Image 1 (tube, rainbow, N blue to C red):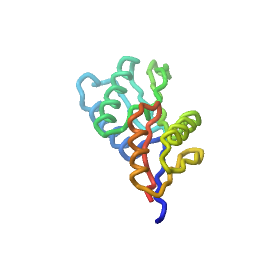
Image 2 (cartoon, rainbow, N blue to C red; image 1 turned 180 degrees about the vertical axis):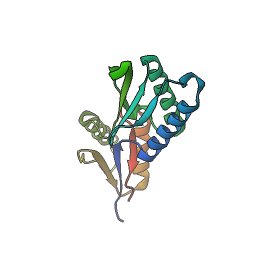
Image 3 (cartoon, rainbow, N blue to C red; image 1 turned 90 degrees about the vertical axis):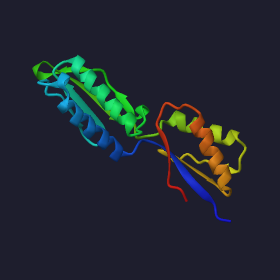
Length: 163
């Protein structure tokens, strides 16, 4: 019988994040409380989002709109690493948001340790940015997925590359 496997990695679907950004920008553009604030929610590189407005208060309000849209699109808020607001030119305020896309080394070690502690016949080698869990029984792999999702981790974990 061939071995089945899947990967555990950190991150979110970039397309869903893009949809959330577009929806938040559209809502901010039409809401009355954001009128004449020239508020911007947009990508600022490959893995960064920029929220900028006239004041820190408006920037924080726009960030809340972005969070709401992420929740509705089923994007984990753990994937958003939000920096403190900072002043930029013209008296404006900016909040930078980084997407978490890599699995922290300490979390990867803890996951491997937890998987081995289940005593199921699976192999969980740590491959740097992901953990590949392989085993002969698909039931064992499903048990590992249940165990991982039942615990609350500080990173947004997802299961990919099913074979």
